[in-house]
Image (tube, rainbow, N blue to C red; front, side, top):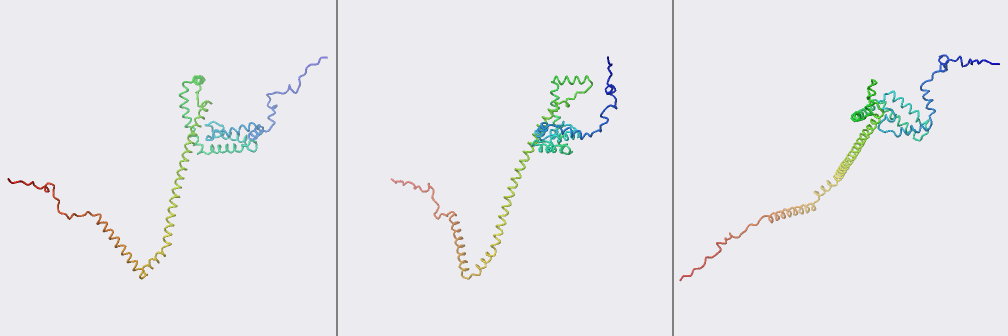
Amino acid sequence: MASADVPSTTTANARPNDPKSDPSEDEPEEDAELLLKSFFADIRDTDRTLEVERVLGAFKLNPYEYLNVPFDADDAAIKRAFRKSSLVIHPDKCKHEHAKDAFEALGAAYKVLTDETRKASVDAVLNYCKELVSKEWGKTAAKDGAMRMRALVASQRGEEYDFTTTPEFHNAWKAKAREVMAQAEWRKRKQALRIKDEEGRQRELEEEQRDARKQKREAVAQWEKGRESRVDTWRGFHKGGGQSGGSSAAAAGAAAGAAAGSAAGSAAAAPKKSTAGPRRGVVGAIKPPKVRMQ
């Protein structure tokens, strides 16, 4: 007895496009924050280790590289990148020995980009580097056939080809930013060393002047300390009878001797006057010859 094939009612009545048959309608909507956390809870330890090493190996002077975002990223993109990376390398979830260092470095970079003043300073340097790369890129673009072809295709589509949005341009921009920032940091450190040396020399000079003033104060104090003894000695000198006279006579004799010596020295230094008469000349000294009379 042949039996007819009867389609199953469980599958035949199901309509995939029927909104009532969609199982997602019966499930409650989950918050995006919970979905993000549940997603990162399943990340392998290898991925966490790689992210820690990426953060620690980032260029230290550019906070954008810590967050792995483009240099012209907006505040929303910066915030998303920070949340994503921080959940991956959080020390409570990551077993890497340097997870804490990476997490602190990431937080420091995020603080720079959330501070308007510090972010404006970084953006000014990056915009300067972008201008330099744009000038260099524009010179080489005229000779690059691939770039001319991409510009032609974009113009045929009615679009404007912007080479500043290409990954090649961003890599060149990153390299130029590293070069400029490294040079600026080197000049800053050299200036700091000069200032430190100058401050050291200034401190040494101040110490020398302080020691000189201290020695002068000590000498004045020592002189003042012996004032009474000098006054007493002087008073005893005047009140002492014969000793005073003898001393006065000795002092007078010494003064007279000094005066005599000075006079003698002056007399010795003065030219001596001649007492002889005037000297005859050579012609006057010759006698005339005698003439014999014949």
